[in-house]
Image (tube, rainbow over all chains, first blue to last red; front, side):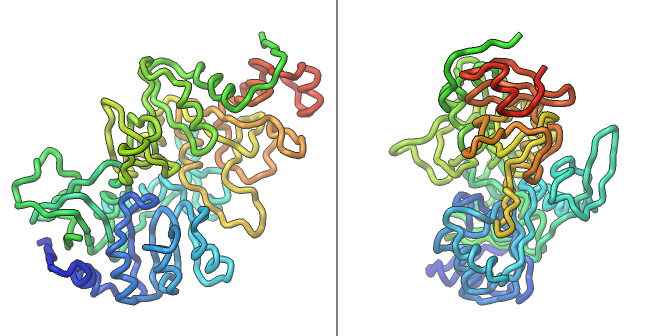
Length: 224
Length: 214
């Protein structure tokens, strides 16, 4: 069953949606840059104050909002991402250079596929991405049909925080344009998936052919 | 046979040179930075479809004014428009498309390319650098053909086309062609071959790069 959290006070709704995230949790956070970033849920997580988090996101925070503030508050022990260094990633850069945050850099497609594998019950996969590079060091390598591959392991989360566009009351989701990005794979890869949407429609109002994330993957929907 | 022209190419001319080699109906990914200039020279009536790794086929030009939508951006996080026939998909599908060899051409920038087609474009190897790879390694090994767009020489005058990489590799044996201000080169298992030269003679090229070309 999907819980639909609706409050006249959107801040209270967001706070309720993340209230049970414990210290030490692995949290998958959607978004590519600001598109699809669940900023209100991230802000709620920061207010909640759970620490020692492992956060999976494509980037490591931008500017002075969302994930960047979660980092600044010292709540993140480890970042798993593809592209931490950006012109406005100053909070991460400072923490990293001070040795106060761990970093695991993963090629972007491998990051997505590791989460897809986790959600699909796959124990690992051989990928040609990264073969012969620094990011393949320490990984099992195999030659299959004359091509070199490295073994990549699944990446799951305790929680996923995702931004979609519209949900129905069952928790079926549709996204908007390139804000879809990591949302659908993260929703499959977490024990508890929390989704912020612009609006909730009655069950039956979404075209079943158009549903991108089926409700089975969604635990909480909050309208923000 | 290679052709020799008198003047070196501007970035815009390199972009046009690359666009001329992209076949009709191709599915193409243009990397962040200089390669995005290639889009300005693609004739969309030839049915070239642009892929952006954050989940879209049929990407159009940069958006302006009221067209700007924060939910519609390219891999460089620049707002863009959609073209008729566009489609959206999630990140795992987007990279499956790439890794699975479905894209015809990918154009990337580079710090160095080796004569064997090894690519370095993600990390300078500097000890204090924060590593950031993004989609570079996936792009390098995914497309049927990987084109590199770069200047032939670095700011110190050293050749960026090299016998062996000195920067950390992004992918091995993955580049097929290198388009530069001074010429176009094929690289790979058969070694480097000159396609055309701009503002350099074959002798000057050999001297300044230290490489033997076919």
